[in-house]
Length: 414
Ligand code: GCU
Image (tube, rainbow, N blue to C red; front, top):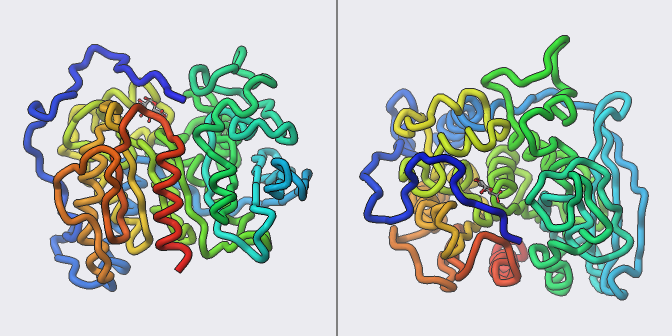
């Protein structure tokens, strides 16, 4: 699927490389107090925690650290799903003492594999039923944002939405390669609109009388990333899952969430960003395509209130997005762009991998070795940072998955 990604504002956007003005990135390996990081110990003790709090305070907002009570209820099992290729399960995760909030996890496992399997975990845009035609998948009853999937009527998913984003998920391919898939609707965590903080998981943490996050508290992306970690809590209890080999993946806004989840939660063994763009993999100081100002105006609920201060003031932001990628080190990370997806700034997405490479070097791991963007459909990165520029538009498709599966074979399976 292809979301409309045209600028909503008259602010001039750069879509031509020659208009990018020079910029200075915050030094990845220099602490706020001016010390240079030389070892992985310095990185882990000082710089990594410092970067995590800078991203929390200035970008995504703080994720609450309190634990909420959780209960897992498996309500569906089919050991002969998808024409016999798969085992399907559906599990509701209840949050809060009385189960005030919940999310549904849809899981597929390859039927012909004995023992636990590595799993891809990702959020979807419009309900679990969009990932496959399978009539056994529960259709979400929750509010769905306009434009994120076909056949949503008055913000409700219809029967016809079943499988409407199957091309983004290629479930059969994933299973055939020996991986499981777990997915959750992002709207279970927080509906994707600015006035829904009372309806999502935020409300579990509100203080008496609070109904909006404070300016340094998490926004929707934070809540979605939190949900990915809670799904991981479940995966750790499921015997069919090899929880040491879970790759977190997401497309676009949900790619931003996957990166933030992977940065914060080191249980994720691999992270995949598909066309995540501004507020995801793209270097924001390039101001190419979408900018901080535009994203905050169009989607005021995604980031923290504090992030609003940096609209048009990119250089004042104490971090840039190569540092988000670096927070994943030394775990494997794959960044993908699409040639027509200028809005997400393919070159900026590539460069964040390149500029994150010194963090991988601290672990003796290779990252990306040249600042030159590779040609279309030429995946690159012999080390733990993979990248490709797919020919085509803003979507996730079979070509993308082929590269992710290949990268996972290389790093998760060994
Ligand atoms: C819009 C938004 C992007 C986002 C995209 C998506 O285009 O501007 O930041 O990534 O939607 O989620 O598809």
